Image (cartoon, rainbow, N blue to C red; front, side, top):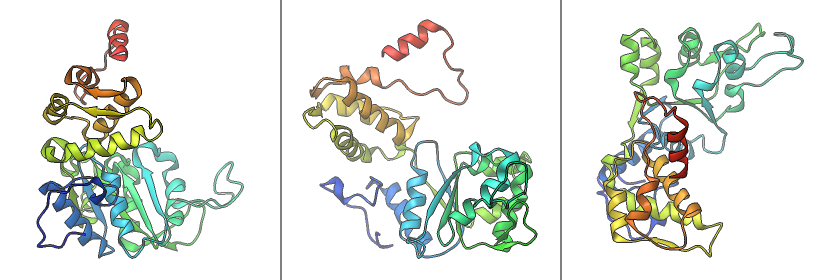
Length: 289
């Protein structure tokens, strides 16, 4: 990790990247410093950032450099766990706890014992089950569904969100006490548009990854294409950049890539306020592009 007093330097090789993350801009150096601080503790961490900025990579870096590194790292897609099965998915269940429960079942907290549980998009957890997560954080214990006795939890919780939990608290959509329990250590991950100097290194990494399976297909960017990538707004952030490079390698011919060839691949994903295209002709046009 970078020392607290160390200033960012201009690397010459992408192998100098921090773990699986790529970035040497001042905003990313600050993220690395915060990761280092978080890894030295066992406190709960809240990672905040737009969709596609790499919040799970930050969570994994915290785990990998902590005292829990040899134990499991278990990610949870909070929005994909229905309220009706949340308890059994997270805390596990005992045999006979409900219809079809023919054996004891381990939940996320058991699976991550000794390690870290990463709750991605924590703001999507239904408010009616939030008290159960709060109890886990406060009491360091949980009760599997159907069990008469609580179990002690040995897990570090790392959460992430692309939403403003403060706003959700004001709107009574997220518990205030749970928010403060989660927001012990906070890491704000910058969007790609605020770290444009990292784009060339990210492109180099993604080109290397995408061409690994087809080494005979050599591609490189012409200067005008590099300018287009640098000037793009990237609403989908690093994830969108990776996808763009993957499509470039899959669909484009080998050789130099010009700005003209690159621009059709930069169709931005719709924002939350935009309606998806519904006309068949528009859908076909987008797919062809």
